[in-house]
Length: 150
Image (cartoon, rainbow, N blue to C red; front, side, top):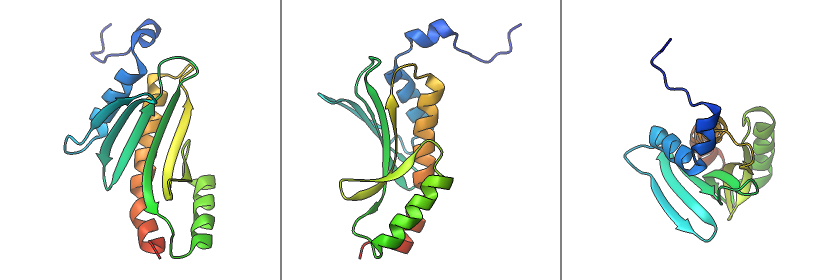
């Protein structure tokens, strides 16, 4: 019975590269055809606009030891009140970030998620990218308003 929906079988998952899945997810989320991709020694990088944030995706390779890293900057440091900001971010990490988390990268507060690609399904790729993009877009403006640069 054909329901008209396309479902990948386990065998098809095995032949779909993580990079292809990432590109499919990004094409469904990006705005204004904002997606860009580059290749370096550290792997493939994608950048796209989602709401009011930029989202970055890095895939270091396709082996089980390689990593999928997704991040989105939401606030530059220093803030108006670093102590209150850190408390707020720890509270959010415990209650509102799902598989992602707030952290500091390159003197910025970012929402990030990372994991090895071992046994990584297309659904997990999609969820990691979507969660980071959504959490960052949901919190960037309020964090900037409350804690923007000193």
